[in-house]
Image 1 (cartoon, one colour):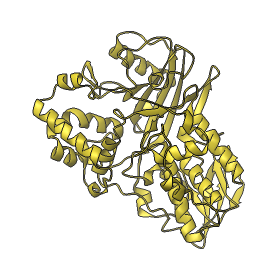
Image 2 (cartoon, helix red, strand yellow):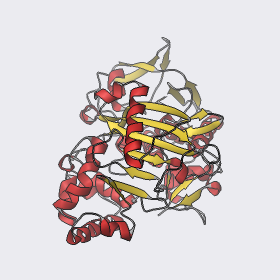
Image 3 (cartoon, helix red, strand yellow):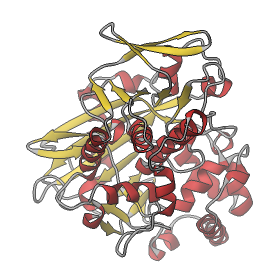
Image 4 (tube, helix red, strand yellow):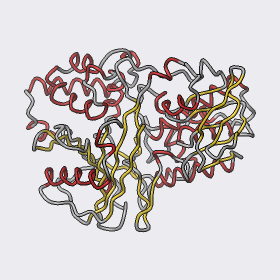
Length: 445
């Protein structure tokens, strides 16, 4: 039984069904599978709940897009990532902007050295238990850290570089989302098609999907989980349970589980506001990091600058994003109060008022694990309830959390279940992913 129908849970359920398990059930509280990769409809068009793009190194995602017949429709585009410092916006991938950025020439060379090292090194596990400040200061300089990285780690985790994982930062720099081509599917919201296609895969594999039902308790007896109690009072028995829920939620369902790593992880919250306007935003960019710490938003995305076909013709589709603690006052403010903050940010940055045709604000109380300097992946299997397994992006450190890493985590957890409870007689999806090679026009490295 899989608790949670986000992409990690869907990946685990699909892998078990493909391996020959015939009694797999997914329980999801939402109306649709997909979790944070879900979407909504406005004025007859699908829009993502937040920014999503296809990473060119995301082999697991490319594999599933191929399985679903979507890969041939993916298009790749180089986008601009801007970095705000005071009243100025800089594209650090542009030689002109890089030269005018207020940093001494020697520190700029040191920054280039750090980025070159990150581009060449894919595996950053040797930097586990070290902090991002040590990494930046060693290969760049304290001034580079202060001017470029301290604002970003505080925006992402509300932590200074000294308290953030060096391995996580190294992996993030390696992927270079601002410089590498990003993928999208024209005339479509690709996450909608992905989630719908994965739902169809589960149905074809005989997986039972129960949406609109929330798990409220995991009942155990004799040192093993036995039943999942749902919010309608029904109980569903299971032999093996996979939790694809945030660990804070899982701990409420199974307070008797004292697995140490499971109890130590905490999450940031997310505010994500999507809106459409007929106005043009200049300069052109896809991703703007608001690093001066003076705004309410941490970043602004112009989704239509990656996918020009999103929304109606001529529309500009914006996404305001704020990472914060869910105990912070802003998270509890009304939608109107939060949007007033974002409108003020927009006016200060671009010099005119935003005229939004519509707005959709999403609050995610547990969005991203906080990858602190001592972060360790939880074990795949509970030490207290041995028939309970864990899956989610919190188990993929130091990889960059993405659509594909969520799916990959599900495959990894399914592999652990198969290893302990029988390998089944069908295909191993994780093996298929390892053997997968994108066709011409696709990307992976």
